[in-house]
Image (cartoon, rainbow, N blue to C red; front, side, top):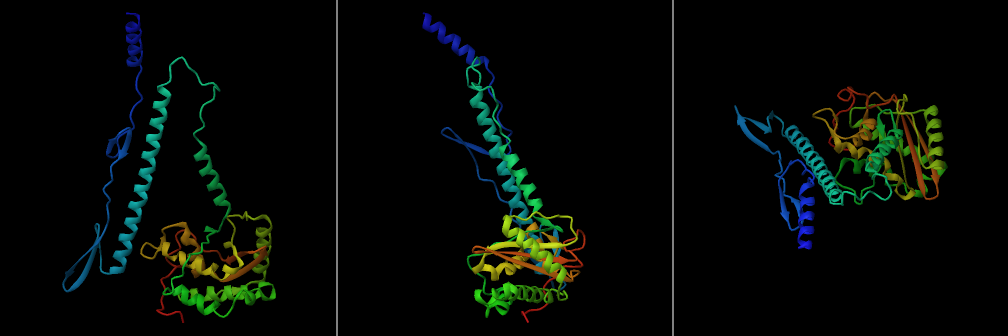
Length: 329
């Protein structure tokens, strides 16, 4: 009789304790065993439809009509990228909500009279602090609204315009060549490559500035010594900088230019901050360039300074133009 009474008391205690609330239902879920699994979300994908009006082709994407297929394609790609980013953001929110509910459920199942042995609460802000610190460090690497950006693709697209420019400038100059005269040859070829790109985007050639060269060299020396570069993002100069193995130093500028894929000529604005590297290179109002190069062990630290700086808000349309020539010449 006594065990029966204890069992009833235990059941009463459990029933009197409120279960934690379930997360708000934002998408569909299914239960597989002990797991709650989110069902696949229907993906909204924008496509182009075409028809003819008075003998002329009209292209439609979503609710907008275009007479140029390229503009319609660019608009659809922009919408699809937006939808992809939105799905990714929602997925993160759902996972976070489920994890909070799971942790809350674990805590609620503890016996009411038991307290945490440490008396401290779990610090759940670690990720938020990490993101905040990353943004703080990121802002230090920005000057004139232009970001540091460099990545080396495993394989080059030999059919691209930038590859033809790159090959024209660097094909006959290897590591021994561009290391000559304390990397003076390297600096000269960097200027040549920039001016080839600019001439194909309706920009005048940049001229080398002794003052900017000295400033860029001081920053490159500091960059190599300290392995970081803290700059004033509100300065009057635009800047690009990178550190790379010496054997790959020839592709630094090509990689900056190839961020063009993140720029929308239809909307006349970058779709990502990454594209600010491309826009600074071809910014038509820029007139002068300084190049600084410093070697540290097997790495090269490169700093490019532009004046006047590019990437000014509201001025992309009058400073960044499509490539006007069909060849690299």
